[in-house]
Amino acid sequence: MEVITINKKENILDNLFNILSKDLHFNVSKLSKENFNQNWKVPEGFISIIGLENAKKPVFYFGLTDNYKEYSGFKKIKSVKGQNLIFFRIFYLFNRKDLLEKEKYVVANAFNGLLLAIKIDKDYFINRAIEVLTEHYEKDDFVKKAIEHVMEENMLEDIEEAIKYIANRDYNWLIGRIKYYAKTFQYSGEGYYLIPLKTNLEITPGLIVDKDNVIIDLENCQLFQHYLIYVDTKNNKIIYNKERLCTKKPALIDIKIDENTCPWCGAKLRIVKSKKGEFLGCPNYPKCLYRRFPKKVN
Image (cartoon, rainbow, N blue to C red; front, side):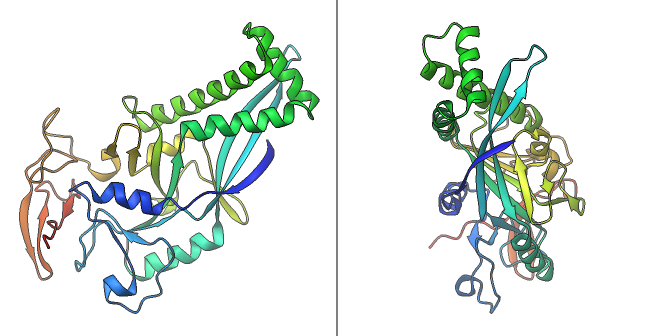
């Protein structure tokens, strides 16, 4: 893999908060001294999500981090016939020490896990690929021959068209594999993915760990089997990974989801009373862990 650039991604948390807070099935709030009334040292970007707000034993509280760098690059491969082949790739690097500090906070406060948030955007991927490959066409003989081979093999009219062909080819190949492993064929594949740092107390399969970093390589698509939430920004859908969140099979197919229905298994929610107040819980607990506090009306 030849690394070309290292870019700091823009902060995605504000936009993600705005999307999630519009869904009545989410309790989303930023943890801070002001709104949690605690003197905790709160890590950057820490939130509670899908949880029992202020409950004694929260079910799903997560730290969420977008503090990552993005690497753009391409692979150079010689085919069995000796032809030059190139494949554009993007992957994401999280600072391992930063994650360890956030994880300590999660464990110390009895929260359930740390999520890594990334955003996949088709236009960004393709435009970045075109930019990188165009730049290296003039200065890298291997890249030049590979692009010219694509132009000739696919009967394309010029180099610019060949570069666009490679960009679209590589995006479609990657996103197709991600949708296959995530079982989200009916969705765009674009948008936000919330991926757990750990699964069954071990680093989630598909994450690459080296001495200083934790890396998400889109080519390791098996990782996306373990996503918890996927926000399809193209189709304006929030998708739950029910295999991770609910072990009971949905009772109904094409069920109409409303404020009184569990969005994970389709059961009618029931009122549960606790010392911290009433909340709506799924009657299929513990097979289904869905629960929420009703939205407060100001």
